[in-house]
Image (cartoon, rainbow, N blue to C red; front, side, top):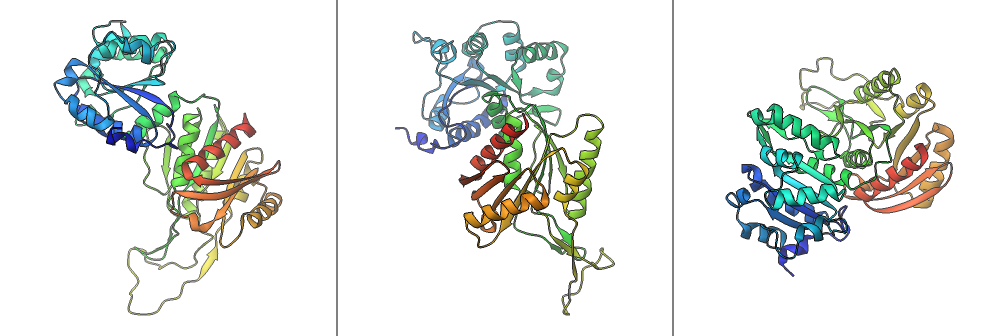
Length: 406
């Protein structure tokens, strides 16, 4: 086994998938190495094909090192385009990344002049997912013929990943965006619903620089948002984390009052047009805030003397959501310390009656900031225990909500 193959995760979100990565002649092709490695870390088997122009920009040996196999640069007697992208081909999807304006236009015109276009046309005919990541100068992107050809491919179900627009160029997007687009293309789009997700830790000001907060990372909310998106949901994420994505709407928040006001604002505005179908609240919002923060928040309180803080309870966001929007599906989270799963389950049943959420996720607070969690999902119908990576937890939660609201 090639040493690079050892990084392929057996339990990754792309485990069992075979992805063909096509490289074309854009200078952004050097970033494909990172994409290859990320796909493998997520469990995918990666097959790389290269256009002649790509060969001028990056070596086949470097690709060999990255994925553990020599890239294909021409169609041989093994008819690789058929065995991989044909009607019974072993590949699950084709990503052209980076993709030049020339390649986009050739595919849209049904023009076949090399290995990349041959794979693309074969895959389109076989109804295989095709993901295109454009990389070109802005003037080329705005060329009316390139735009027309892009629209033609979009109408045929080809997925385009928006590039980063910097320095008048359509540059290579973040790997997260490419992976999300790929996962969406491989996932049945059953969750055609509108979801609002509240995530991260709130911060309550003491003075100009000091705050009261907690160790919540916001990771669970980010993963829930991604899983909802790849299943077809329209997602709005309100978060205090630095998470960025072009795949859904993200609203930055900090204090509890900001979270509270922004949540109700989004719900009220959506009610005028297309209401949200569900609200999911994995956020760790502070139960208390400082009653009298330093009157001049532009100044730092001196550390030369002892100070006392008077904490007062914050309002209850969950109760406010259910009070103002009683018909919306509401999923809340509850973290406790030192309680067994059975005790958490009993607490969940009690909270269902008192706080009126439709689903509650309970866990031990020791999971804050970690990559794994052990939780119990409690609804009126049943209780389900789960232990594992937060990625799989998010997937399980969206599966449960999908069953409830579609």
